[in-house]
Image 1 (cartoon, one colour):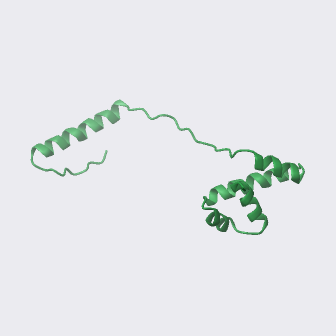
Image 2 (cartoon, helix red, strand yellow):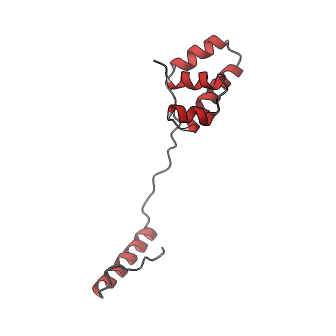
Image 3 (cartoon, rainbow, N blue to C red):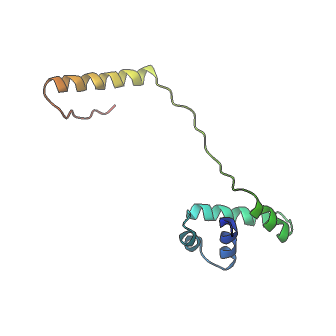
Length: 104
């Protein structure tokens, strides 16, 4: 059984477009592009083609996950939330079941 990387590279060498490969395999076009760019970068590094192919196809894909900083609940945001909740409670008490949304 072929891996997706093998199929992507084979299809790319046959001249298929990235979109056609992604539709055929049912994977993202960005994933197809990532595999092709990685493969071509390794070929450009000067290693032999056979070494690049065997090394590239035997490795598991690497994902670059972005880790953002954690959001903190500041006093300013807490006050704004409290104001909106209080306003909503007042509107409910006055009989307005669907309170208007306020912009914070």
